[in-house]
Image 1 (cartoon, helix red, strand yellow):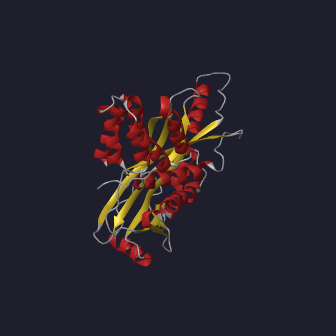
Image 2 (cartoon, rainbow, N blue to C red):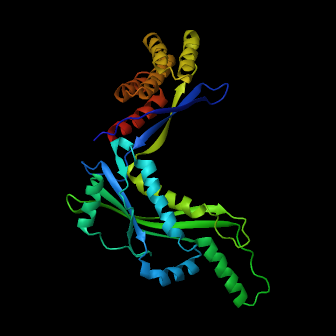
Image 3 (cartoon, rainbow, N blue to C red):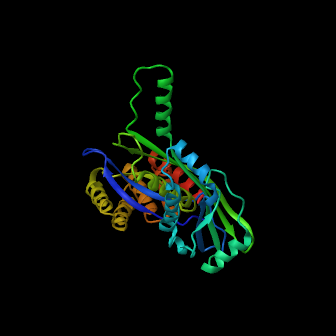
Amino acid sequence: MKTKLLLLLLSITILSSCSKYGYVQLKYPSSPNAVLPDGIKTIAIVNRSIAPKDNKHNILTETILSGEVAGSDKIASDECLKAIFDRFNGHQDYRVVFPAKTRLVGTGTRVTPDILNWKVVKDICDSTNADALLVLEMFDSNSDILLSALNNQINSVLSGNTSAPAPPNQIRMNVISYWRMYDPKNKAIIDQYQSTSYLTFNTTSLLNTPPPEALPQTAYAAGEEYIYRFLPSYYYVRRDLYKKGKGAFKDQFRTGFRKSEVANWKGAYDVWLGIAEKATGKNAGKACLNLAVACEVLGKNEEALAWAKKSYEDYGNKLGRDYANKLKYRINVE
């Protein structure tokens, strides 16, 4: 299926005061890494990373070893869900909803729980009129740099060094998250994904503990990383064009270029078309090249390709040859 063309004119910049070239940068969408099945429009989300109440001893042990604040993962993991809601709700008519109970008991560790009971999945989806259920199955965090600093301190003492190394003034938080998306109608797993998200923070604490915002922000970034898989990404292309011509067409080239600078591409097209119809040689080749750029900006890729070819085939403009090849590639991949 052809990707819908989206163009954003970012800038048109004269390379230097005496240059004969200008350029325009265009922003194009690329396909998302993951696609939801047809019929999935409303998605309920829950947090299943909460530890069972009888697991306090193991959680406390892990908290001490990893440098976490007791209970912090339970609170921060909800930020993952908030990111999903903020970034995906309303995108292309998708709707993200929270059920009455947004937390389910899981392992509370880096061990991924078994698949949810399908009756539980169906009940949650029915209660929210959702087509699918997205579950944060596992969430775990720690601070790599804090652990590294602690190990260095211990090794220094054990080796007999008189002075221990100074602790770092930056903390890198990392969050491991695992997601599953359930389809209750077909009893199928739509998507499974695990990621590790990192954010680095400055700290002024004497103990070099992470600042209060470190874990929630990293957890939010983990939620964004997951949902961005379903959103289009973007890439930028640069298109060179001529701002100067020769002889009788010198002023017309400048007029056309000035129109393009203020995003009046239809007006610029008309000026360059007038040149292309009357000029010969290099002026005609330059005008054809500029017409190709104007057509691409206006979303007329086939017409842009025709003008780029004409620029090279009829007038020997090498920019036209290179541009034609780029346009052919774009048209083929779309």
